[in-house]
Length: 445
Ligand code: AMP
Image (cartoon, rainbow, N blue to C red; front, side):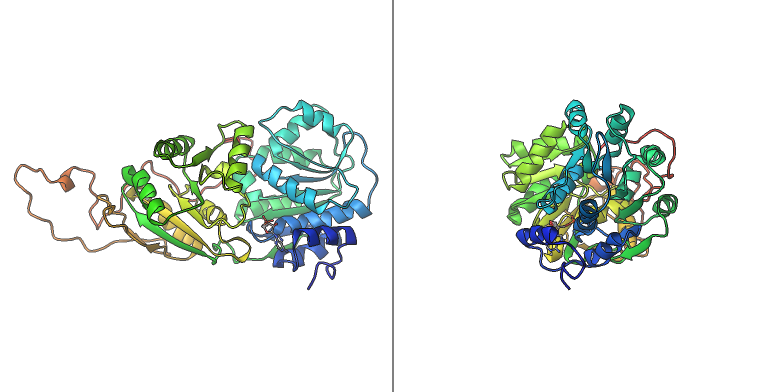
């Protein structure tokens, strides 16, 4: 099968040739003809499957071949994405595909001045990539009209809900013409996403290109158990031992990102960090430098790193496990992309046993443990498996207490091999976010 047999026009085929795309990926093979035929889509596809081209190519073709010329402040196709980085990335892909077409494309997102965006929108844009919050700001300030809108794409829809964008999505939805084509892409399909799909899509074609909620099998995954306080030390040890060249590291919190970056930089290691508190220009610069291999270690929160396409990334390290088990799949999806192999290593402490268990249940696998001599944890991580059970081992016979009660293991925090380590704070591994709930947004990307 070729892109030509899928019905793409010559200017697009020329762009694909320049980019070196030879064969359509499975999601492209299914999505391109359906979108060209005007169908709504509900596609379960992880990043790395080529989904961006799957919706962008036919969309650009429809815009080039059909519909009226775009008028002032109007937009004909809208791609909604959860984060600023993703907006840049998707727009860059769109720009490359549209190289030989007379179409205007643009990206708008928060964290940067709104005025240049308003100026740019004045003459109208054929295809706009946007984060939901900034899109609504522009709409409310009359910088945008949706009367010409013919297609809406929700990219990474699950992530948009995770980030608390359901209210924004509902407001955008109300402002759009009812007659339009809608394409929904999501890595995972929770009940919330299905509900959203039910509200937004009209007789959609369902596409599923990888088994639901199963992590890419091109990624070798393993964990190292360690005490929480020794994670930075273990990270540096593994990095030196494995002679790691380029690593994307995920930490749970913004403070966690900053602390690790500071520690690494203090050791003379070329590291940088991205998270939601940093200005957009700083985030983009760190990312660009990492992509250009000018930065060796990029430490990120989930919010900042979701959906990023970094070519040939060999290794992802979960410095902390994600609170939401599905994020594990997104994180390790940064490596082993487009058929290459990759490695994903998670540093797991006793507090995280419930998160580990949730990940194993979701990915239907027991992650291999490869413990590091000299880093064996004092607070043992109980055994887990894909059944979701924390496996209890028979208790070891108690050692007689040493007089004076002095041993290190008796300091109170020791977790016996037969006990489940307490989760601190108690964390529910899988979240539920009501669709279109009107509560406050949890955090900004
Ligand atoms: P995506 O899943 O859209 O983030 O795409 C993942 C990566 O695969 C991007 O770097 C694309 O440029 C690349 N890609 C997408 N489709 C193809 C294709 N048919 N052949 C080769 N590379 C592709």
